[in-house]
Length: 279
Image (cartoon, rainbow, N blue to C red; front, side):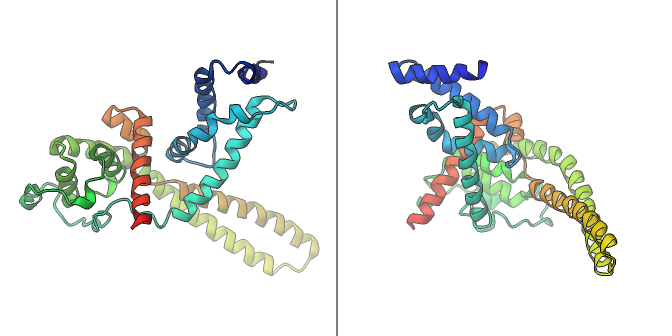
């Protein structure tokens, strides 16, 4: 009967209207733990989803009607539908995101020396009015998400704009890059596995084309279905694996709570897209 404890509390809240804040906190904790366990989102996407839909989640207590199922069933069902819509929105925006006004922010010039002098980037100048809305602390979080691709010129631009200590920022970038080495090795192995699955899948299709015996053809189709499943799983794993640091890794390096990183990057991107739409 433990699963009905939350249901009883929600129903008591409907009658008395008391303990609303404490009840919202418990609902938020349950929702956050459920979101983090999902396999449809990575750790950072789940954090962004929780921040964006937090207000919708905690007000579910007001619209709940007891029909024999516990409140948790209503809560998790609502979260699943919202997550489905959120992932559709992510897929629409994934290739159109532009996170920074600097045109060369994503252009990596690997030939540049890592610690070569760049005096011009230290010249003091007033910031452009277009960039004054950017929260510098959140901008540092966002820049560290792309630590794997930062070259010397980008580092100097970020240090100048964010007004942070250059040595401190370089230490953060170096620490995050070291964490990426293991993930890069996994990416190489996963790519090899994906290519083997693709070759096996293609060869099994050719074998099926040469099958004329009905019994052998049915057996080959079942075998092809298993190979296809392995191929699609490898492709999904390859899509989810990325080289940029996770928000949790940035949190560990900066000694800042992960929720602060999640919300900082989320609100910076939200403000940017609102300005893009208004322009």
